[in-house]
Every structure is written in C-alpha cells, then in structure tokens.
Amino acid sequence: MAGRVVLVARDDPIINANQLGYQLPGTIVQAPGFGVTVVISGRSVENYHPGLVAIQVAVELRAAGFRLSQELVLSQHNTVEIWLR
Image 1 (spheres, rainbow, N blue to C red):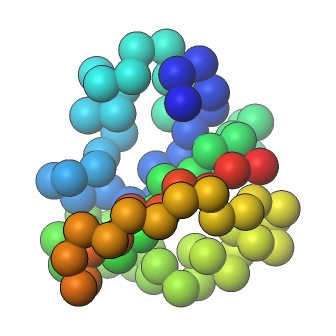
Image 2: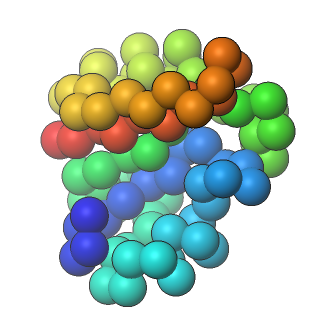
C-alpha cells in the first residue's frame, strides 16, 4: 500500500491512521473523494467512530467501484477488510 491513497474506515487500537502512516511511510491517508484507491474497513468492538457500520460501508464501497481484496478474521467480532479500486 505504500505510495497509494488510503482511507481508513476502521479506526481502533489495531488499525488507525496514525499507525498506518508510521508503518507504511509514503502512504497518504485521506478523506473520501481525493483519489482514494485503498480502503481499510472491518468490524471492531472498540471502534473510535461508532457511526461507521461495517455492512453499510461495504455497500457504499461496492457502489463506488471498490472490490473486496482481502478479509482478515482476527476474532468473532473483529475483522479487517482491504478494498481496492
């Protein structure tokens, strides 16, 4: 993902924008609509933004032309999804 424009639609202690920028130098973390080609989403019991509903995020991403590239199941209620466009 280095060098790509990434939107983090899952923000918790495991995945967050600060951590991503530190772990993948050169990655640009952006808001929607600014050339985003990768979205990180998923389910989490500790989401910093409870308004992010994983099912609705997936519907909107598919409608915007993204495809689910990878899903990591960390536990029953904790997943990470990588979407690409």
